[in-house]
Amino acid sequence: MKKNNLYTSLSPDPGDTPIIAEHISKSYNKGTAPALSNVSLTVKKGELFGLIGPDGAGKTTLFRILTTLLLADSGQARISGYDVVKDFKQIRSTVGYMPGKFSLYQDLTVQENLTFFAALFGTEVATQYELIRDIYDQIEPFKNRRAGKLSGGMKQKLALCCALIHKPSVLFLDEPTTGVDVVSRREFWEMLQKLKRQGITILVSTPYMEEAVLCDRIALIQNGQLLNIDTPSQITGTFPAALYAVKAASIYTLLKDLRSWNQVESCYAFGEWLHVTLRQHTGDARALIREYAAAKAHQQVTVQLIAPTIEDSFIRLATTNPLQHGTPNQP
Image 1: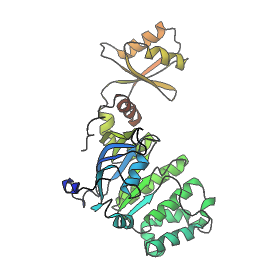
Image 2 (image 1 turned 90 degrees about the vertical axis):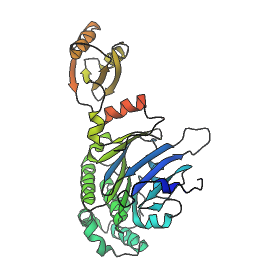
Image 3 (image 1 turned 180 degrees about the horizontal axis):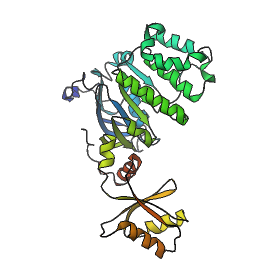
Image 4 (image 1 turned 120 degrees about the vertical axis):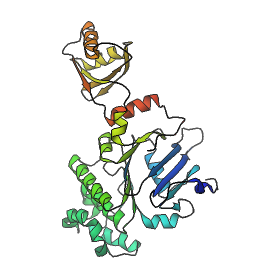
């Protein structure tokens, strides 16, 4: 990383904005696409901020840079006012980090893992129960079980307890619900809401678009670039076109036919439906789609006007990528 003193340009107060990243770029191999390209974002104190994108989008690389485990090629970042390069020791003692892969000692019991991590930070487990009590109560019946023998949901709860054992003010959670059952995922997000109410700033990444609505603000990321930063409602509310859900007896044939129609702007599969936007037109769009499908001999055609989801917004931004060379909106 280039040595510079550009941190003086970071205008937000680190007390109100504990996570500040500006123009972060990272490449692993010359001649290949960068893992991160000119990424800038800020997270406010007490905010639950989501980094949303598929596998390979650059989420883990950004997390490793912000938690001082990896040096960026260029750019700058501060965590709670600390320089991620010069002040890495202070950052590591004041933040909690839960990596995507379960990284606790699988041969140690639940209680032994908690005791070990408490000792690393020079604290007593019992003194931290106020912060982690609700989470610990769920795993206490298994406190003598080896961590490697826990279910996926219990592993995540143990990892979260260990990340919170030293009362961090900032918490980094890299894809904490990947591979976890639906019930455990819901319980985990409920725990995050409780931690937020205790004043902890949380940056969480996930490939699950439906989890985005549980965050205060989100950043959509693809191929190492931020597509947009805003509240979930604002991102879906500014979807620029009417969106229609369409299906028929032969969904794959319908997909090909709609994509070849010059009235269609976009068409992609979404579960058992196709999500479709049209180019400029007049009249009843639903009737227009039904008439075209009937002309192509499709049977059992259904057309509905629907509200766009975060995933719809992500797909549109990823295909048009209007911010590829710009800076995403940061309200």
